[in-house]
Length: 110
Image (cartoon, rainbow, N blue to C red; front, side, top):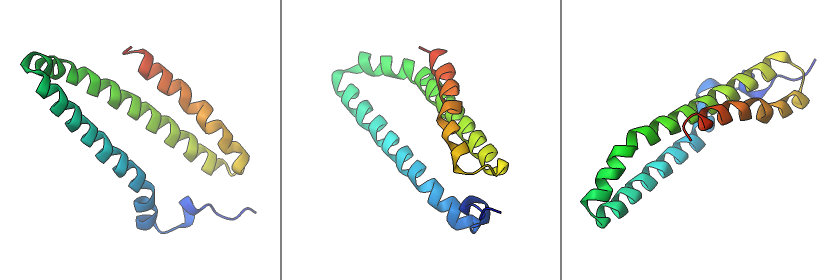
């Protein structure tokens, strides 16, 4: 019998903290880039800033749909791979399973 995976046997709080840190850094970086873009466009004038405000909801919707489908697809693939007990070789399918989700959500808004 294979040894239990650390995601299924490690303490919950440290595991969640360890897995959430990269996402927190990415969200902070995204927010800082958005602020920097808004400051830059604000220096160009009122009309460009109004155009940015008009497009902002659609851009955010595209980003959230893409992030949701990527996160959902990857989380689903990883949980199925962990639950199957087939070992690390089964993990190689994770990118293959998540790529179609990302492509569908991105192509819908391009």
